[in-house]
Length: 226
Image (spheres, rainbow, N blue to C red):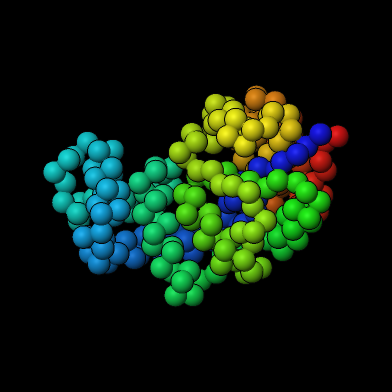
């Protein structure tokens, strides 16, 4: 019996276009001035230091780090300090109402229904936990954060690695077979399936169908395995 649903964001609950064309573009544009304004913030300093470690350039200037971070944004690199800095910038953007988080109406409605039915809902995204909370908390469908029991990001591991899903199952104290994972990406579904999790691929516009997994075009079509 499925007792919890673990969902991806980009391409699953939310459009890829929103993430790339709104969130990523906003972070790329605002990164230099954000770093200048918050250079004395200890948290920002820690993240810049972590980026220098990844660059293997401990003496790199802030400008050099910013330039590298912008390249990583363009490359959609799944790096924890980058994701955390993006989350801080997006927080400013959401609070200033520069944009609202895109969530497909079918996803918002069905997540609400599952929550009312007593299913536990969790998010696993390469975006930071902070960014996840912001997107769902400032969504076009309202504040959806009360629906979720927890959030997971790259601190739990890469989304293409089975061990990440084992960690999440252990954290929420459920057997993998009691969890349904929703994603648009075949490699992520494969990794979750390796642990015994049930899987379903959301096949939104432009998504390539994945072999060996249930498929649904909307959240309304997701069938919970019995």
